[in-house]
Image (tube, rainbow, N blue to C red):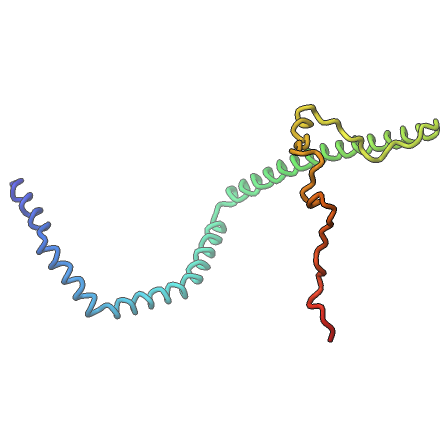
Amino acid sequence: MDDENDESVLDNKDPAFIGAIFSNVTEFLQLYGWFIVIALAAVYFLYSRIQPWLYRASQRREENSYKKLDVGVAQSRLEAMEKARQKMQAELDEQAKVFAEQLKIKEEKKRQEKIEDWERHLQGKGYKSKTKAPEEKPAATAALNKPKQSLRPGYNPLSGDDSGACYRPARRGGAGGGG
């Protein structure tokens, strides 16, 4: 019995069988191909027209399902939403409080600096410099920024020969004629 099933499977894989299927499919497409293309285009067109209506219908169905809920379930849902809102508001208030404290500290620091500056002025020491003092660079970065040594210390490639002739570029104007 197993041998019969194996033979039928082998018969289906015969190249002539595959060729017959292929020729039947191509013949069908040759006869009815344009009808299939037109039918697919019509289905796509109808679907694109009906899709917004289906979407609105599903939205209405969802809204109506919420209306059919039990009053207790709706009340618990509203309470949960209110609790979540209160939690978010508390977090926002905490962040605002921290920001306000930081702002007060910054303003107090500026006020103290102005008072110290005025006292320094009254003592005759002068106002504090508004520009920041240049920071000293570490030795490692100073070594990296050191200019390269040239091959000849007195040589400048832009100066030309040592004959004393000075290069002068041509005028930038157009042709030198009148008219």
